[in-house]
Amino acid sequence: MSNVYDKAHELSRSLRDSDEFQQLKNLHVQVEEDEVAKRMLDNFRNVQLELQQKQMQGQQPTEEEITQAQQQFEMVQQHEVISLLMEQEQKVSTVIGDVNKIITEPLEELYGNPDDPENVQ
Amino acid sequence: MSNVYDKAHELSRSLRDSDEFQQLKNLHVQVEEDEVAKRMLDNFRNVQLELQQKQMQGQQPTEEEITQAQQQFEMVQQHEVISLLMEQEQKVSTVIGDVNKIITEPLEELYGNPDDPENVQ
Image (cartoon, rainbow over all chains, first blue to last red):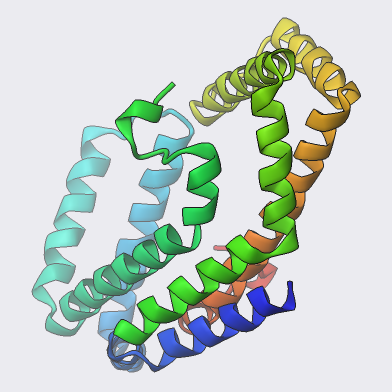
């Protein structure tokens, strides 16, 4: 078992050393150090989080909330560093998704791939 | 980047070779080959899935549904192989959870640990 944990730590280190993560870190620091950018992004994340929580509870967001979220999204998109940060988050998120798929391959062999339409119950 | 994927494949292989996973696989095969056990477990999983989907949609399960789920749980628990399989699934799930925590450590440094009460928004 210890081998699994060793391999997980090796993977974690290689992720930390990757260009994708290092760029994400740099952009993150840039936003953290820019008070206006930070407040803008925090506001945007909070609105997103509230919307998600509502949807998870089966509630429909109001038209006003959707408009507000869209406006905030357009605003943060126009901020160069924030928009680069969000792009980079998307890249890292794709890598993490790929990594998760690779790791759970052994389980897929037992339980099937939930993304495979043949396995939809 | 390729190093991250190489490391992910190494981790996946070590997970597949682990005693925890091999035992899970053996128990899974035993249940699959036992028609009664398989039907029992499938029924139980379906009831569980329906309950989860209801709860995710913000609906309260009825008292009848809860009783039905409890009864099915007690029934599968009494089946030796199924109960061993469920125990083993729990062990493997713990390992996967630990592995995920290790892998996402670099991200935690940027975004904080969502399980840390200080980071609750």
